[in-house]
Image 1: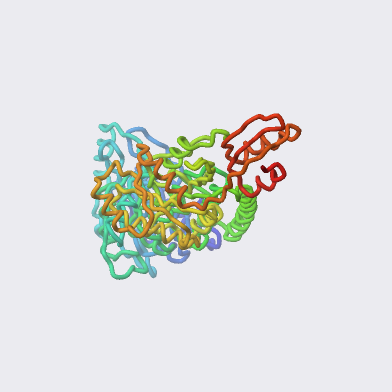
Image 2: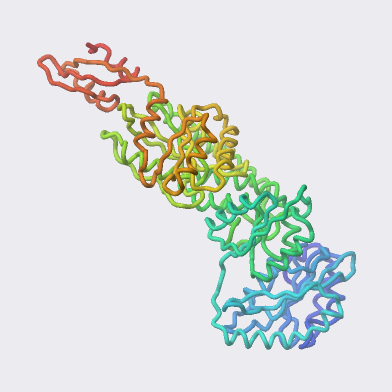
Length: 592
């Protein structure tokens, strides 16, 4: 029986494959010359991968046909502390025999005796690559050969190699390790690569090494140079890495080419950021926005991405909108995008209604680079300046990590001059923030556009303060909020020297600046005083005498104004209060 994708293959070729079950392979070499010739012929005609599974007796137990880049592997019984006793021989019709990420993953997962890939191009054998299991630090690893010529392939005694590995497995206390171990690659700067490392760690990925290649232009096929790709393939093997993360957005063809030549899953910075957003989103709105951004990013890449989309297992780039297979129907994704946009429109209308209800209150928004301390500042301000009449609401999540907060929150706080304002905490910005993500979060970030004042929170302890400030200003420009009144809030002054803070303040001396430490509650009163000074004062001090027959207005003033004095007199309740135009209009008839 022939497994896999046999649609459109003529019966004569299927019969030729069926006859392979009668063949017996040598025990000490990976396969026979005759098998290579038949696999080469069939694979060239159908332009698909063809795979055979062979046991240690040399019997072929399974034959399968896949597509141009992957092929099914039969169910293999797991044997404790031993190799499976199965070797896989398959073709790569693209002419490149480098073991793919899927090949290496299968080699380790099923503890195969050997994984052999045969490169075929224009009906000719190009080269072959063999992979064997090894043991390092009580973990099963993959050891691959260089690209071999036909005679070199047949000269390797696999029986000896299998025997050595079985002894190692028996002696070792193997620990299953499904963690993701990455090598980072960039062409920009060390700063950008350091930030990519933080993003990877925020996603639970262990970073093994960082590689930077300074280039005047990006390679259209590989992003980096061909020589650097070969270096990465060797480095992947040395470090036992299973994912390569690039610092810029990659095209689908670049991902495919890199995966074919490196033999590991390849993702880019955008995929990493989307992954973090997918795992951190809590509210329905944030989840919809992330899903929308993921679908928009994946739509043009469906026909090109390799193992990122063909995998159905766990790992970066596989969480989120649901369907991940290469064969995902583009029409279904477009319909999903349409539906999600409609849901966001409904949420936007609700947000507009909420905003109208708060129109009488001055609006202040916290903006800044991710992990600058916005959520910590918001929580501390709510603690020390919460209106007494308000119901205490829960804190927003705060942590020393990138993108700890994704869900926008708005709370009322009290200024020193007794005015109530709204304070909104927003999602942090970052350099190279994916365009689709900015577009998806525009409905949330509209709060920034409608604010009366922006508090630009800056992490003084960062080595890249200027670049981070510039990145935030760029995103604000994209949102149409660049001209808003803004105060620069230099946060985390407890972590750096006074000279460092002075230098930052001097560089931005044209802006209104306040120095604080949100966590240590340093200068928070000063910050609130400066906010009160900048915001236009629209409240009026009015005196009322409200008769006892209309005491509902007294309760109204306590809810919607700042009551300064209150006295019960013979003819009614005397109140002196700071009121806005709406409250004044409602109580005008009792004004003294």
